[in-house]
Amino acid sequence: MSGHNKWSTIKRKKGALDAKRSKIFSKIIKDITISVKESGADPDGNPRLRLAISNAKGASMPKETIQRAINKGADKDAAALHETTYEGKGPHGIAIFVEATTDNLQRTVSNIRAHFNKHGGELGTNGSLAYLFDRKGVFVIPKGTLVQDEFEMEIIDAGAEDISVDDETFTVTTAMEDFGSMMKKIEAMDIEPESASLQRIPKTYVTLEVDQTRKALKLIDILEEDEDVGNVFHNLQISDEMADLL
View (cartoon, rainbow, N blue to C red):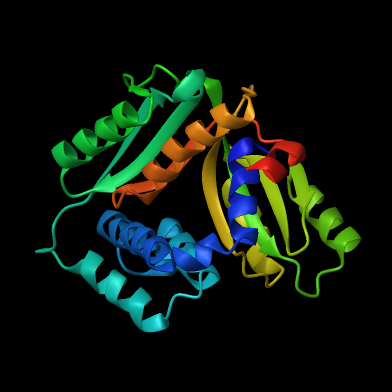
């Protein structure tokens, strides 16, 4: 899979996701809230909300927290949230695409620009790097009791373009237009995904030396830690050999 997914897998194995659980919850809560504001509080009539709730369950978010986020989205007096994106070059020319949700656009762009400047990058204009990525549906599914061959056959028939496997999960990639139908297939199979999202997968990759990779990943990590940032995508290739050196 992409360097982004590879690095996400490395961090999951190192337990970093547990350390950042409150940050993950914050991002999911924003997604639930904005989904409700867009299309209402009924998951049956709001596919985006249904997906956000599924991601919340995959992250073991308590039901009460999910409900509070729904209630916040339904509150007309709550602060408006805006979805926005940023594109820039990281250290040694890697392409970085940032997706954010914010109640203050001026604060967010100022913070994002500062992150890039401080860590050897440069924030660009919207549209300057988007062409380097394809939008794909990405589903992370716990292995559980699933039989790999049977599962893969079902998922391929449903439109999976790629399936990667590690010790704990299947990662299934689909075309963007097949995202909804794949979600329905997974629901029909009574599977609760760990996460399901539209991601930006790089068309080509950049390979750097170890020290250069560390510097690039430092900026990526700082961006991911920003309170307003939901996702960070990049075209840095991280091989298994490189991962062992990081």
